[in-house]
Length: 563
Image 1 (cartoon, rainbow, N blue to C red):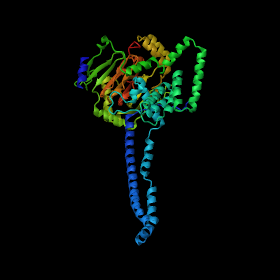
Image 2 (cartoon, rainbow, N blue to C red):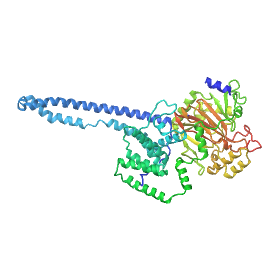
Image 3 (spheres, rainbow, N blue to C red):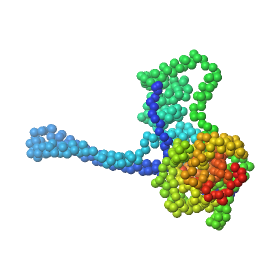
């Protein structure tokens, strides 16, 4: 691995009102950039409106000052003043004509331009669903990267260029969104943060009474009755006539008295304490592994296994294009074998691919195992576009490069998929290949040498049975995955493999490759992987899914199912 280090040196009531939840917000830096430009345009329009209003007021002010002096003189000696024929004429003229003109000026609406621009731009504004999705992205980052609310609120994140912070009102809004999702764990965290910032003296439109109302109920829902009562008492100190709080307090006192009378057994009490302690969702073991890997806390390879990983110059098995100019390749993992190609796509090619993809970016989809059709899913939060080789010589050249270096036929592969993950963008653990039926998975597990790992993975087949996912393509299953990293990520954004504990971090200009199927055509369940949420920055990737058809002589079958 010394060679690898050299390359690195050279070269992420009772309760409260309830509203319907919205679906996840899908982030794309490209589209978010458009929103920033839209807001900038609105600010310019707003400034123009302010200038117009200031000009209007300046004219009115000059008129008022002139008349103030004139009327002051006239009222001291009205008869003498009107004795001058010019003054008499001008008085008639002012009252008959000029005051009418002033009235028209005062009534003139200077906001037409600004309102017109607002009306045009409003069609591009995010809606309530988008705001909810952005909030849920923050909560997702908080969980995945073990961030406390104070860290997030103060914007103390790794790798940030433009530090920003959340106001007490922002924290209150996050808490309300969590509440609408019946996520009382995050409701408590963010309402407490809002309350803390107000207690520290922050000036805000957020109301402590409203915050305590949500907070006390969220705490109660998690089983902490004593804390809920204490928060409700504090609320009543601020607003003794608060109807819901008074009702809640009576109910809490009734429950507390009932619990004392019942004198619960110690066993029940222990169970209640455990339920109170575990406020987060009871995630599956895979979820915990996934989040640990995203934080870089995965299991480390033993020195013996690390010695099996090498760096090399690779010529694509004597491919004529690479004999004189081999590419740099390094091993990322042994089983499944994951290799990374360095300096494999240029900055110019990356920009071309991004520019081709940007106009087409739309919510990324997955195969629905029940309908066999493509659909959006909460566990895949990104935007993607598809590019064909005939559209651009750059895409065609990239496809040829993948074929030369993998030795696989790309004529049966899917088009190049380009994906953009903004802040919070992710793709939760999944397989790239289509799984067989549950029975075949179980029998496969029984025959394998992967033992417990594959036996555990067999359960996923019953949950997402999709043997005909690629039937319409007529090209067989996805035999392999090629993934380009087209940007560096300030924090987060790793590609992780929870089954084996591997984490592959984005490095611009590199690509990783692995086989999804064994040579026998059976799925390799150790390739289950995920795209971790982007914590800071944004992530551009493009991938090529290669299929079985056309590989019969390029990657022949073996006699063993798992070889």
